[in-house]
Figure: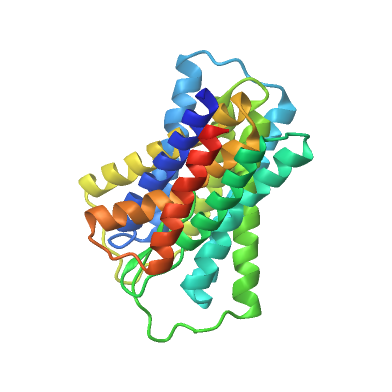
Amino acid sequence: MLAFGLGLASGLVWGAADFVGGLMTRRLAPATVLVVGQGAGLATTATLVVLLGEPRPAARFLLIGALGGLAGAIGLASLYRGLAVGPMSIVAPAAALSGAIPVVAGLAQGERPAPVQLAGILLAAVGIVLAARATDGPSVAVGPDLAVARAPRPTAPSRPSVAALGYAAAAALGLGLVMTALDAAAAGGSALWASMMVRASSVPLFLVAWLLRPRGGERRPSPGELGVVALVGLADNLANVLFALAANTGLLAVVSVLGSLYPVTTVLLARAVLHERLSRSQSIGVAAALGGVALIAGG
């Protein structure tokens, strides 16, 4: 049950961070949100590693974490681009399939969840994809590092292009590899080191994107806004650590589905805080995801 609780907590925290991060991208440049938030997460995790005297894992585990961070940065960039060139109602759910990557990795490593858990994994996966579907009004398309605030775009294509589907597939692969890398890197003995290495390789890329961003009409963030963005990064890093701990305590194939519940958390927060209406498919998706969680817990 410890792995179940940690995995579920990671999905809840990721989703909450995505929700607040998405709101902040409506006010600030996404590159600014990424640099400040993820930079704060990196600095805090590095400080904890020093203060707690965390032993440094073997070099191969550090490398796995760093490669996971690169994959995550590429996945996030692909998600942004896919949302820009394709219909969000298709690109966002396709990217939400990222949880399938660590599930496959866990099964390939010989993990064998109970039949009830396998049914829960399938039900939750379907629910997550449905919950990630875009609504007609202003909303948030989610990803495990940052939500992307959006508004209706009259000129958006109604059908996905090959390029949009390619970006969505790249996003799912990259973001799924982050979760897989967190599990593998934390196997070296430290979830904190695993999370820090993910950020250590991705933050420089985000910094480059921030330096190269178009600056026309950009508003300078207030101290309060920077504080909120920093908290988003801290929450995101906390979710990374929780997931790494969960994956090393239980089955990756099961825990990864619980961690992938972030879209459900985000749409529920949008419903509760912003009073956004869920579409029929989103409502069905939320119910299916929660039913899948119940089956996983029962198994």
